[in-house]
Image (tube, rainbow, N blue to C red; front, side, top):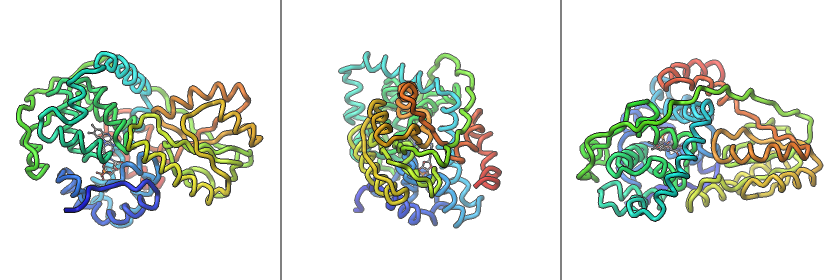
Length: 396
Ligand SMILES: Cc1cc2nc3c(=O)[nH]c(=O)nc-3n(C[C@H](O)[C@H](O)[C@H](O)COP(=O)(O)OP(=O)(O)OC[C@H]3O[C@@H](n4cnc5c(N)ncnc54)[C@H](O)[C@@H]3O)c2cc1C
């Protein structure tokens, strides 16, 4: 039997995986992608998510490589899936209060469920529910779950086990190597009926048996999924206008796990005095933090070679240390790739006034991909996906 898939935490591995998958990204992907035949049989999906999540490789690179080998109509399904990620990022960027709402609810339910047996057995995979228990263990052991398993797991967590969705989202975010504040939070909300208001996702034994090739057919799942409710959604907030970095100003480069490919954010001839690489994403559990820390080291090697500057790895965003590093390097600008809504953005927002008081500007440079796609995430994915061919054709 083949070994379960693993995710070497470096860009070369990501590029190799893309090359190996690209021919299967057309009609094969559209036909087979929903099957979860187990951790040893994942050739029907790309397994690129941990790399895309931390931008060891970019959405643009993946879509370009796929469209170089397939027509748009052949690869439409795959391209749309990659763009789901962009859509969720844009949706949350337009409604950052939903991230704050998730964190506040999580704090409240964590206190209520401290020591709760039902929560421990869901996370340890000892509920007795076939499939669900296997996915809980697979998640902790590998840091990955197939998309369909994520949907079934979230549905059983919310509607059969009746556990708070925020605790499930937190369990995923800690363990998934691709754990992402937007894709994860908004997918859990979608299953719960909060995202497409009133529309829930109900996992059934038949559907699970069909798409797991008969591996699992859990008994006793609930047959009704009544949507959760919440306060109305906040109004859309304007996106921040992209800012640019003075090409001549000496600057320190800050790289975070939101974007481990600064080589394609900043101009090739840009000279940085020093680069500081953040090696934790602020949300991780065991495996995901190991992945991020190793990916940070991979990034440091590339940054040194590309920008010709010394690098330093740090954990945690401590404004006092950033100020000391900027002062040592005699610069008043710290440049970083834009951090979208999530833990890193929260930490940067908290650090900004402290840096400013010390005369240091933090400049967050946005990728053109995000600048062009995010404004179209105001409504549902259907309206968003209509824009994909035009934006790809005109801009990328
Ligand atoms: C409850 C739940 C939680 C999820 N949490 C995350 C998360 O934290 N991080 C994350 O990246 N994805 C998340 N997803 C989406 C999806 O399950 C994963 O992106 C996908 O399974 C990754 O495997 P892959 O790379 O083989 O995907 P492929 O099917 O090969 O797709 C290619 C790429 O497209 C993107 N993508 C595919 N499907 C989706 C989707 N539904 N939403 C957003 N992006 C998508 C990913 O970047 C993925 O790498 C979640 C889905 C659910 C239902």
